[in-house]
Image (tube, rainbow, N blue to C red):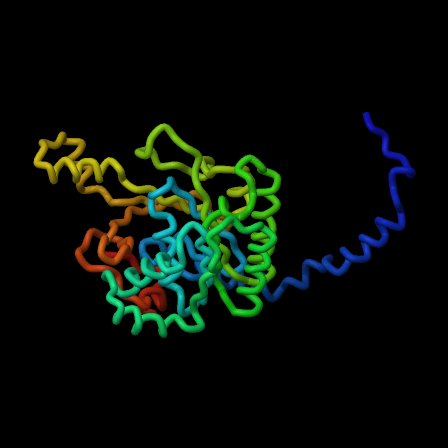
Length: 324
């Protein structure tokens, strides 16, 4: 057993540190205002919504929080997250650091989602002015050191007034895949930055390789340190229905389908799973359909895309409205 003696303590050092920490020690009664507001609100869910009303009563994107967005490569996590950012853009100005895709490609995809179809140059010229003061792009394609990412978050929040910040992805933040300690420190600092600047930070993460793409991964499949999901307020996982896509291809070729394949045709195109919900507690999974020409994910199978900008009535005064 290790015995701690007076020689192990530097009194002056600890007194100096204690003086600094004293400013953070507050009587519990001082929190009466925020506590009363929280109590009056009961179980009401506050924050910015996801685009689909069937999610409203389960999860919102609050200021001061960190959300992780995971999914297998090519399963649409960045596309879906871009739609979430667009949906709330005029309430939550955003900066997108999409370091795996050229800025013009990111913007083209978002133009499709906003307009509901593939845009012409004339469409783009009328659409871009609407984004002024609401959307910024971090123009970097190479890996960027994590300290620079944190500096970018500081600038976006304090100078630009951004309320939502997307970092796509952790792989491009200058941390090696097996350096779990560095990943933990970085995600911890991101969570601190979200609270410090009262913004919502979205971090895109890749998943560990599984046996195949048919099984939807969970929060424990996020590549890297376990603390990534531990530190997050929300963990979302996006998963494409590869079985349905295979059945659709077989149907197009005129090949006979099994009963199981016929049932697959009626399933959603993708699943959005809320794998962690720190403040609501409820976890859930929602089926979504992909609308190709708009690159939108929609709540029900339909030839029509969702309107943009978001109708205010879609969220208030009826936050618990659901699709028919």
